[in-house]
Length: 229
Image 1 (cartoon, one colour):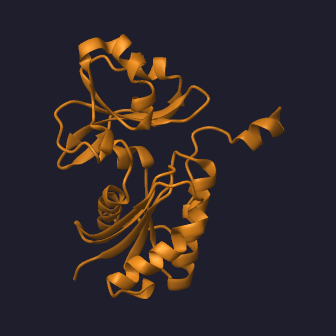
Image 2 (cartoon, one colour):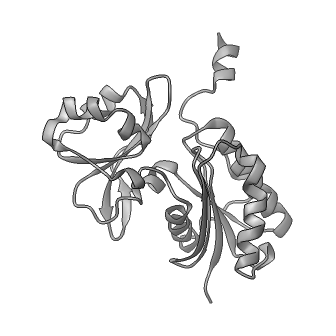
């Protein structure tokens, strides 16, 4: 029997949701407008499930992108997923934003550096290699100055993500013709890619109850920094 998952990605302003059966994407909805995710997310989930003639109770689990990314946006997605999981008694399968972003550059032979703009002149980044149809991490996820991140790329590398767009001149300056870039339309993490990673987690039996699902921020929030100061 096919495994049905609903997967939510709210780590970046261009958020999306996807409905999948095993490795097949049934539907995906994306929105990149100046509205908070809380304004539209629940309604979009209801519409997506209705169009697929499914209810939450018919799902086998929920996937969610847990970060890194926008602190507020991540909390909206996690709160929504946890509420659905509690109501329908479903397991949650967590997915990295950066690995989801690396899913946008499938089957490349070069290492892939997924890079998100973290503001404050920093980026979230992780390098991957494609193995057996999935991006496998070569490094730990980190936040840091783009100069330092790029300096660790000692071989021809494909850069993907809005961080690569923002800091492209810097990357080219440091790496020259060793720097390669994904097309503009591939530089956002998509729920469809996250859904496939969530299915992998389902196959490994890595479902979590809501109380064990936490966001990955990689650095302290502005409020935490102000409090510590």
